[in-house]
Image 1 (cartoon, protein in one colour):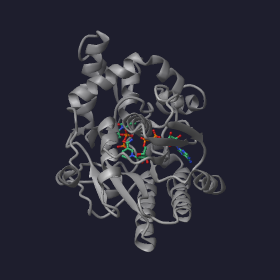
Image 2 (cartoon, protein in one colour; image 1 turned 90 degrees about the horizontal axis):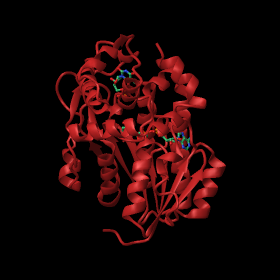
Image 3 (cartoon, rainbow, N blue to C red; image 1 turned 60 degrees about the horizontal axis):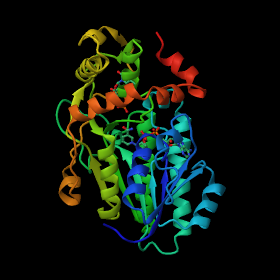
Length: 352
Ligand code: NAD
Ligand code: TYD
């Protein structure tokens, strides 16, 4: 356990992964002060953090990472010891509809933060900029093989291209200025508080409301799913024990073809809803494929496991049932996040 007092800035802490990370850090390190900087876009929601908002070592700051003057002033006035950067536009479908927003937040916003930290930190001793990234930067796999840390970058969607670009900037600052950084590239996360536009929460919500389940293309696309709390645990461990300048892949060796996962989701949700098991499968509707859809992602997390000692803590079946129960019993959260500014997009996109 690290007993030093530290001020850590977490960006995007009101989002899905960020809120789990904030919760973990605030509770586990009462001697740290955790600052959560978030713009509160459609994906950011302070309801994700009601259980920690009154803790004395937690402060929320509303702000935009692309606002250079604001970010520079924030670093000057707070003198953070570390940054864990998660703020991003994160949904591939939105990146296809509007790539520019992804360049602005994911690329420009990252560079604004890098400059603010580099210029504020008089010495890099005991400082760290942790950039949270995705396995999607590596592109798409065939039937076999895994992404390792030195798999060449081959981003194929505007989302992954913007994340890849931001990763390159973070590494470039290390090589050029000796800037203290680590990067982790994680596979698809699932769990509570994920905005219901991504596959798992969208489908649980639609099953509950007996709406169509829009399966892109042939449904044989493969993703490697990790429980979000295990990702947050990995970030904590890499923040404290990772080697500066290094990259760590994060994943739970848990590949699922979309159709197999969707069948499981339907059946477990049917059980939890007291419906005849299998009945929700009738909601499955094949729709037009996502343009440029990556076929398969799969992570080899050996480096993280052997050098850092991380291991996934629960099985997928436990995590998925827990997640389904969470969405089914948090109706108010679902209603709140799918109303207001997001509602129109949500309806256009997903109503049949
Ligand atoms: P999310 O969309 O749920 O949350 C993103 C957060 O960033 C939101 O709270 C949003 O308000 C905030 N934000 C967006 N633009 C901002 C800006 N300009 N200034 C300040 N805040 C801003 O995303 P997530 O799924 O929690 O992902 C978090 C990070 O992890 C992202 O960098 C993403 O690329 C990465 N990642 C996600 C996954 C996944 O499966 N979700 C997997 C690997 C890596
Ligand atoms: P998603 O949750 O958007 O994550 P990512 O694209 O970052 O992997 O999608 C996961 C998989 O599910 C991906 O292969 C696309 C597919 N998908 C559908 O078939 N239908 C949907 O409505 C969504 C959102 C995704």
